[in-house]
Image (cartoon, rainbow, N blue to C red; front, top):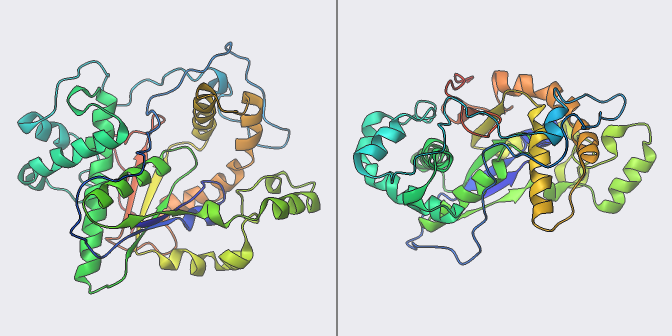
Length: 351
C-alpha cells in the first residue's frame, strides 16, 4: 500500500493525497521489523501557561475562534461517542460484539450487524494487533483507546479491505490507490501508519508516500518568499504555490497530476477549521515534552493562521460534493470531533 499523505495546508495539495493498497496478497504473515509508531492522544491537551495569555494572530489573518484554547486547551469534554475513560474491562466475546455495534461508522463503512457477529473473532484478532502497534494493553484499554480501535480504525480498515476486493473483482491488476484528505492535525498520518502496518502484518503489501515530498526545496521556498514579501501565504510552505510545479505539473493540473490516480477516497471531515490551532499546540507541546524544540503559542498562531484561508475556500466544496474524482461506492466521508473521535451523527454520502 502506498499512501500520499497530504500536509493539510493548501486545498489542491489536500485533494491530491492518496494511498495505494496492493492488489496482490503475499503468503507472509506476522509482524514488522520497523519500530511501531505511537499514536497521538485523542483527548484534549492542557499545556502550561496562565489563562487568557494567548496572543492574537498577525494583522490581516484570521483569528482562532478561541485564542484561549492555544494556552488553555484543557481536556475537551468527551463527545457522545467518547464515553468517560473510567472502566477498563477486557473486551472479548459478546461484550466486544455489543461494543462494536455501538460504533458510529458501521453504516458509513457498509458494515452490517450480521457481518460483525459472523467475524467477531477476526475483529478481536485485528483489534489486538492494532493495540500492540499503538502501545495499548488490549485487555486493560481505557474508553478512548477502545474507541480508537473498534469504533474508528477497524471500521475504516474493513472499508479499505472491501475497496481492495472490489478493485480485484473489477479485474484490476494494479495496486489500489486510496486517497486520504484531511486538515493538518486531525490524525490522518496516524491512521495511515496504523492501516499500513496492519495490511502488511496481514500479508498485503502496503506502502505510503506524502505530498510533503513534493514541496519546493528550501532554497526555492526562500526565493519564492523573498519575491513575494507582501504575501504572507507564500512565506512558508504548505499553501498552493509552494509545491514543486515540475514534479506536480502546473497548479491547474492538480486533478490530472493527483486526483485521477486515485481509485477510492477517504475524507476526514472536521466541524471547524479553527480546531487546527489547538491540534497544532498539542503537537508542539508533545515535541517539547520529548526534549525537542517546539513553537510558542505566538508562533503557532502565526503559522496556522496562514492556512485558514485555504481551508475556508475549499472545505465547503470538498464536504459538499467530495474530491474532484469521487465516485459512488468509492468515497467515504467521516467526521471527527475536537478529540479526533468519530461523531455520533455521521454525514450522509455526497456521491
